[in-house]
Length: 279
Image 1 (cartoon, rainbow, N blue to C red):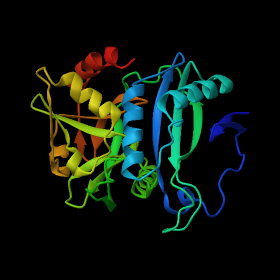
Image 2: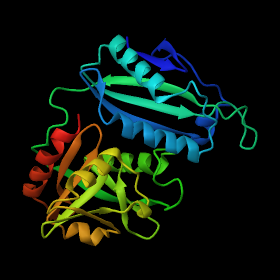
Image 3: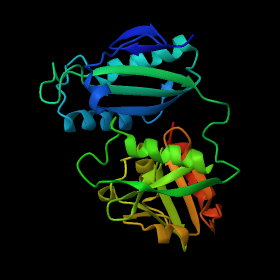
Image 4: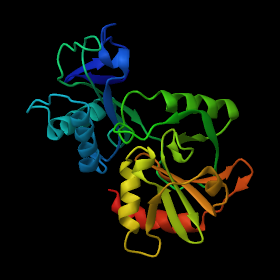
């Protein structure tokens, strides 16, 4: 049986930790990080904790001195080892406020859970079979202060994922209130057109992905430097190549969206340049 951590304590999976008055359950009041561990080491650890801390500050948490990246990193490794996942794991760290109503939180101290799952062999390799992706149009993202955070109020992505499963897609792309593309349910989006690389700017409402940032940084001084701007669905359908990025799978190339088909020759070059910089 797997275990998880709640506020520093190791518990068996299925153990109850939140009552009906919990603000995380009631309102999605919190933030989270999904990280990759290989050989007992978190990849891009500093970047993940920097984004988590930024999210907590934005949401107005009172962060105790003992609640630190160093403490959490130790707990993440302890749990991965106990679950037998330290060799290759997906790690989820969720932070949320405790009990209280909308205006009267019992406190603003962070509560947290940590979970781990074993990753299959070969995870992170560039996919040989391209993804089938579509647009989800029934809910849109706003471009506000919260848009770039990985916060627990995840409903547009949940509905997009359900729609993708119904349509037998591998993923779905979400739009913002202006009709431009934000990101997918679990990844950031990049397109290649005429040997130029583009990705939605942060002001377009996409999550500020750690792997997104890594790709942009890695390519910034070369011929494939990334331009961040608004991207319309029509531009995506006319692109030469499309790929998705996240911290677990790195880069995945998209084979088709609606009636558009894409190659992956430039994506292979980007993947080869990125891989040595991650660990």
